[in-house]
Structures are given as structure tokens and as C-alpha cells.
Amino acid sequence: MDALPPSLHFEPRGDVGTLRLSRSHKRNALDDDTVAGLEQFFSAVPDNVKAIVLHGEGDHFCAGLDLSELRERDVAAGVFHSRSWHRAFEHIEFGRVPVVAVLHGAVVGGGLELAAACHVRVAERSAYYALPEGSRGIFLGGGGSVRLPRLIGTARVMDMMLTGRTYGADEGVALGFSQYAVDAGTGLAKAIELAERIAGNAPMTNFAVMHVLPHNAEQDRASGLLMESLMAAIAQGDPEAKRRLQDFLEKRAAKTVHR
Ligand code: 1HE
Image (cartoon, rainbow, N blue to C red; front, side):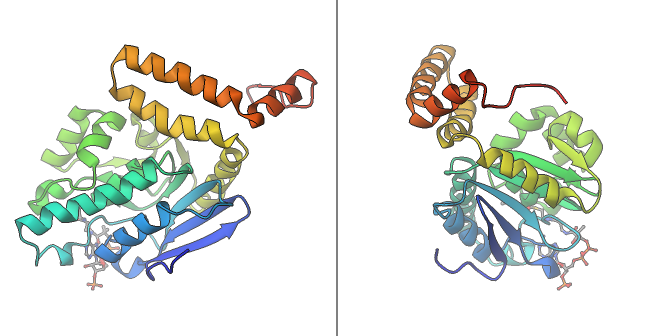
């Protein structure tokens, strides 16, 4: 793996890897180097890593776009800048392995766009969500206008951007910002536990979940159903699926129960 910028810190932990936004003096605001580092990392996740946990150093997950870099940019540079975020975040959403984000403190602007590109979100109770773009005179640029309405609904995104409304961690679970809310200081451990579960799945199943579900949410019904049949056949034809089915039929596998 090529060297990452100092604002990103990767730590392998067996099947799971953690990637930390390490720019807490700027509240993990995303500057160009960090966005390029995210693209570089997620386009070449180390082969032995099966799930990633993304978290932020300090008191905040991410304060969004580094506003100090915005001053110098003209219109054309603005388009290319936004496209660079799109490339990086597409590598997260449609990469090789699922990504679990740990959210705490500010999850705002581009920080919320980054969180939305991840597959599972664990929010500590300090987490809050905001889209201050409206008040800063700018717009979403990291895919948020596409991903966020699908996550929390167009009307809610409009309200957040037009009126500056914010949401907290607990209501965030009910509204779709995150799938989990946990106590302060426990988010990383919870995310690692979830990532280890994810890493234990057959890789083809994780691939199918990450790639087919979002596409099927967007394409027409007939194409979606056909895609599902093709993916189901590919997944079940994999030797890993055969082994797991055999384990169940010979009573070596865990039962599916509700705890
Ligand atoms: C920053 C940034 C940033 C902090 N760009 N430098 N995002 C926002 O509009 C959120 C802006 N940030 C804040 O509202 C606050 O910083 C926080 C609520 C997140 C945290 O407050 P606090 O009191 O802990 O920290 P602070 O004193 O405000 O900031 C500490 C330092 O980080 C300070 O720099 P310093 O050199 O004076 O120490 C801040 O200037 C710096 N900092 N946030 C640059 N965002 C692809 S389009 C996406 C569009 C967007 O993301 S718009 C939303 C931008």
C-alpha cells in the first residue's frame, strides 16, 4: 500500500482494518490530500482485509469540507474538486469490502456525505448531523444530493439545508442517519464487533449486498429482479456457499435466532 497522507491512519487488526481521520486540530475537515488519500486507500484495500472501520480522532467525526481551501477555487476547479470527492466516495460505497463508520460529535456537511457513502453507521450519543452548506453559500458536492435523500428522504435534506435544522444520534437511528446508537466511547468497539461479523460472511455475499442492493434501488423492477437472479446463482455457485450450506445441513452451523 502506498503511503497515506498524515491525515489518515490505517491499522490492520486481522480480517478487519481501521482507518482513522487524523486531523483533529481541524476537526477532521477534509482537505484535498485527505480526499485523495481516501480514494487511494479504498481503491486498493489490502487483500487480507475483509471489512473496514472508519472513525475520527478527537471530539468530532468530521467537520466537512476544509473551508480554507475553498477561497482560492474558480468555477471549473470547483467542478473538478467535487468530482474528486465523487471518485473517492464511490470507491468507498462500491469498493471491495464493507465499511462501518463510527460517528461522534460533528457529522456535518461533507462529513455527513462521507458517512452516507459507508455501509453501516454506528453513532455515539454525541453525534449530530447538519448540512451547513446553505448558510456557507455553497452546495453539497460529495454525492450528498444523491445519497442523502435515499437515506433520510428529500424533504428532510431540504429542511436541513434551507433552515439549518440539525438532528441528534438517537433520533438519527429512527430517521436513517445511522443503524445503531451507542454510549460515548463505545462506538469503535461496537463497529469493530460488527466489522468482524461482516468479515466472517462469504466475500461473494458481501460483494452482492454492497453492489446489487443500491443498484436495484435505482433500476427498473424487471432489471432488478433479473440482476437478483444472476447474483443469487453466482453467490450460491461459489465453493464458500457450498461449504456453508453443508455445515448447516450437518448441524455444524449456528442457527438463526433473535437475541
Ligand atoms: C475548519 C473546519 C472546516 C473546523 N474547514 N477548518 N463545515 C462546516 O461549516 C463546519 C465548520 N466547523 C464548525 O462549525 C466547528 O469547527 C465544529 C462545530 C465542527 C467544531 O467546533 P470546535 O469549537 O470544536 O472547533 P473550532 O474552534 O471551530 O475549530 C478548530 C479549528 O478547526 C479551527 O482552526 P484554527 O486554525 O482556528 O485552530 C477551525 O477553523 C478549524 N475548522 N472546521 C476548515 N470545515 C464537498 S462539499 C461539502 C461542503 C461542506 O462540507 S460545507 C460544511 C463545512
